[in-house]
Image (cartoon, rainbow, N blue to C red; front, top):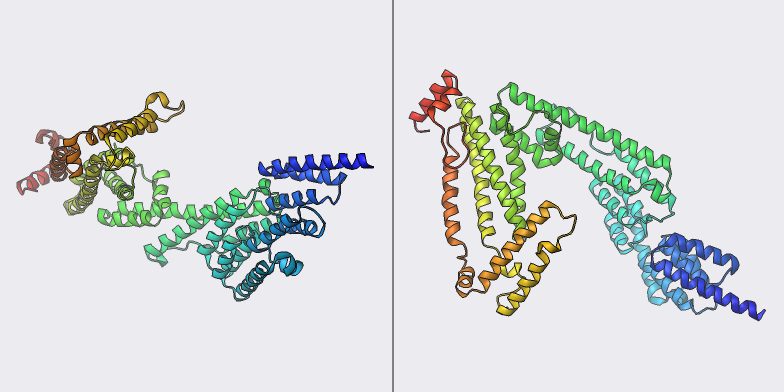
Length: 538
């Protein structure tokens, strides 16, 4: 009997050691299998039951975890006080409100029990009053309880608080465990998602609404659908062992509704473009129409481009299409430029993107000039307005270019104005070593290679400036690259003026095309109009 007991103790100790390692490695399912097998041989062993409670907690099976911890507390064992501490955490920090009915103040402690009572009272009052704000605050405190989040989502949907409901679903997505066996909770989630189709905005004939209302409705719809689709896709029935039927119903309902709105968007986009061509709509109004698309949802402008509702391309000879492409480009470039405005923008990224945007704007102005020449006289002013818009973007770009030409060398070299020459040199060599081509990864992209090469050049320039007394003084006074900046400013002003060049083959800069070449491309009426405007100095 004594020998059996010794062997038993050894076996249990080995099992506990293995379990602790599996739990540490987050291998919950393997740990659960091992502990169940061990309990078959040594039922009711407190050490094994304590480990199972920890596993249940990791699997988010909180009820089972609390039951096991309670058993360990009631049985004499070295794990008793550990189990009490775990219960306090489970009952208060994880907010398992049913603890109040199961455990006395003697087990949880006076303070923990009082906190639990207060939380329970707060939760019950919030549920009775439908106060989702309070419920969400409680859920934030009780970060491991998905049941509370599901209750909040249901309440928010009943109150038509759709935006808040989606935020709660996102939070629920974050806390749900892939190893969770809470099938009923996930079924509830799928039922909620599947039912969302009855709540979302359903597009109606646009003639009954202003453009803004119609676009806003479509945008709201698309945004909701994308969030729901992401939530569903990350809660697959395989990873959660949930009902295939509930999951598939939710996904089918979502896809059906999503296809409805995409069809509506494409139809409306085609209508807008068709009206623009058939009625020779002014470009300024067309810009407004497309601007509403872009401002309210990138999906809408991408639908126009992606589905080739009209054949956009920069080599098109059709002036109207060139003008329309220029308008679209403008709408896409404007936010791209604004994104670079914050001073926190990475210095190398700033310079590379500024170069690309300068090229894009110049190409855009060229297209506008081509289109401008072929449009009717009444349309010329509209195109000039669009050129003004492009020039305003060009002004923004010039300020960014100026900033790119005056980088913060202290920041790039990871030093400060008080750093000694030796410290600057040491930092420079450390960074240069990291950026050396010999240290490139095998699968490095061309874009990343270009970025590192430019950064290498910039830190070399920074080292040269900061270790040279005269250059450093110029840099500190804001005069670094002052001559080149002044030269670029002159070029910038010339380009802006040249953007109103009437020649259809305007290529940027001050280049012009001979009148003989222009005449070949025009009808007699257009040639007469061109000469008239030249005489008037336009």
